[in-house]
Amino acid sequence: MESRGLAIVSLIFLLHISLPVPSFSAASSSKSSIKRSQKRTVTKTIVKRTVATKIAKKNTDSKNAVAAKKSPYSAAVSRRITANFKNGNAARYSPQDLVRAKVFVHYPLKGGIRKRSGAIRNLVLHSTETGRPADARTIVRSWNNIGPRHPGAQYLVDRDGTIIQTADPAYATIHVNDRTSLGGVKNDNSIGIEIVRTGSQKYTQKQLTSLVALVDYVKDRYGITRVCGHGEIQPSDRTDPVAFDWARFSRSLASIERNQLDSKTAYHQETDRTDG
Image (cartoon, rainbow, N blue to C red; front, side):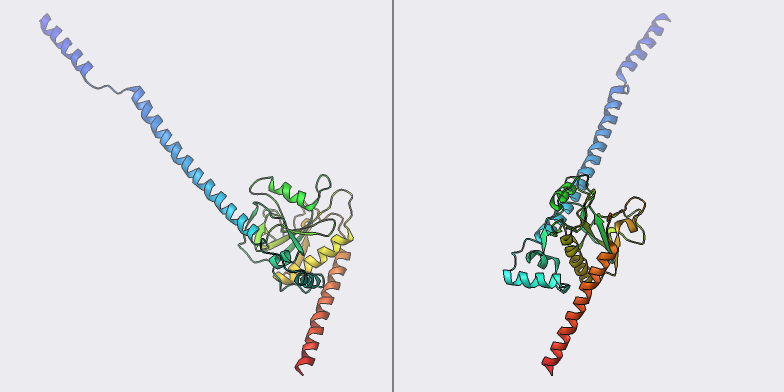
């Protein structure tokens, strides 16, 4: 009887050591392998999205830069286009034409621009209000250094009257806050003009002259009827253009628009006489 009991115990022992027992380390290793696989999949997805975003940004930046790299116009053509711009008769010229005629200086945004999803209906005036005096090019560089999605307007008017074009108005830039702006003004349906000013600086006469001609051109070129200040459509956190004389600006704009109308009337009268 005792020998039978020992035989049974021995058999149980042999069965125990021969049967596979789940290993904790093997199960843990399997879980770790699954986690590593999932992590690799997520990483690949993020990398693909990042690469796609960079490619889209690079393509947009490239188109913006290439658009203004055509050869400049001759001196005679440039003078004619410049005169038409100053007199309010330049709407037939594209922004690239005005860059080639050196009416605008192209100094591109790098990032912060995208294709529009809506028609252009609004023109928003800003003042730069930098912490210390800075020219237009320095301001554009500071925007570009912020990152891929940074603020910026299509145009800046420098203290000496130079008009900087950072992006063709066919592209939208980030110059208003889409979440807080009023009156339906969004980046996709507006063009921004920054007037260089800070502290106690006053707007110069050259700035006002260039600004009026630029606003008249943009209005006519894109059929814009609404011109407003940044502070008007985003009063919660903006007051610019600061210390801007809207009455003086409106009188100057009305004057160039009258000149434009007189030029068109004179042209039609001359045509009528020639035809007769």
